[in-house]
Image (tube, rainbow, N blue to C red; front, side):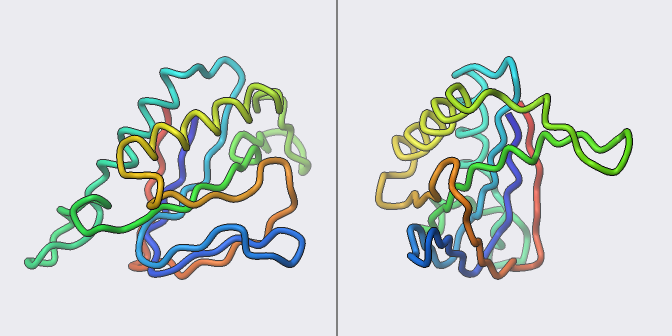
Length: 147
């Protein structure tokens, strides 16, 4: 599994002209699931994302987590994180997990994060839907974690 964490001052996701997820200060997480991923991968990434200390403390050092500052996360499924464009100009998505497995692990990741930081602090997009994602990357700060 791969998580692209973007520290944001705000983010939202729209599906069919309706905002389905919205946060202020926190993390926008793009989550990709690859073939062979398991629940342990989702647990590892959820723990890392919830504990990631990339908010500044009083000394302007990245030392605070979501929980430390009461921030939220918006989680968006994104199979294209496993697009392989090494050959040719059209990416291959053969490394991405099948949709049924990917959705199960995406939901497992979300529920695990809700257990850690509270369900009111986790917003989501819609799996297998065309989404418009808006964000203001604060920093900018972008971190990539892979299980």
